[in-house]
Amino acid sequence: MSSDSLNNMPGWNSQKDVSKVTHAEFNGETNATYAAKAFKDQIKGRTILITGVAPKGLGEGTALAIASGEPKLLVLASRTQSKMDEVVGKVKEQYPAANIKTVVLDLSSVESIEKAAAEVGN
Ligand SMILES: NC(=O)c1ccc[n+]([C@@H]2O[C@H](COP(=O)([O-])OP(=O)(O)OC[C@H]3O[C@@H](n4cnc5c(N)ncnc54)[C@H](OP(=O)(O)O)[C@@H]3O)[C@@H](O)[C@H]2O)c1
Image (spheres, rainbow, N blue to C red):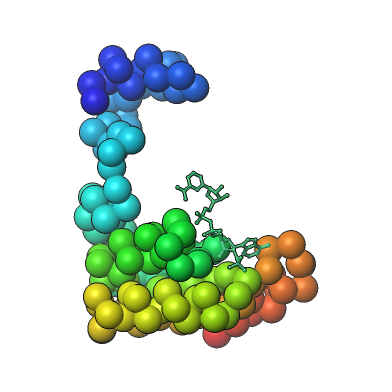
């Protein structure tokens, strides 16, 4: 997609100078794995936390993509432990060396958020 067509997309802020966007080539066809490759230096060796992780959802796709970039630790934080466990299994199938931690988190509860933050910090 050219800079001109990006500037003409509905909802796009045409005041934004796309020449300053780090990856102006990203478009509706760009998948998570491609984006993870493009940001590999920001993933490798880092701790990355993903919220809202369920099988076949965006969280799973994101977890697989981030795992491909060899983070130091991948934290999955979501409401249902069994769904996170399923996603961990899928990630481990493809990336057996991935270091993954799961944290139960209900974003509608301040108490749960504080508990999860303390767990992540440990
Ligand atoms: N999939 C798509 O192509 C697509 C496209 C555009 C926009 N979206 C939007 O992107 C979002 C995610 O989509 P998805 O397909 O990944 O949905 P999904 O498979 O239903 O996953 C949503 C995840 O968020 C978790 N969640 C919901 N409420 C939460 C809370 N209060 N605290 C913590 N976690 C919570 C759910 O937990 P549980 O496992 O406990 O239910 C689930 O794991 C949705 O808002 C969707 O409308 C999706």
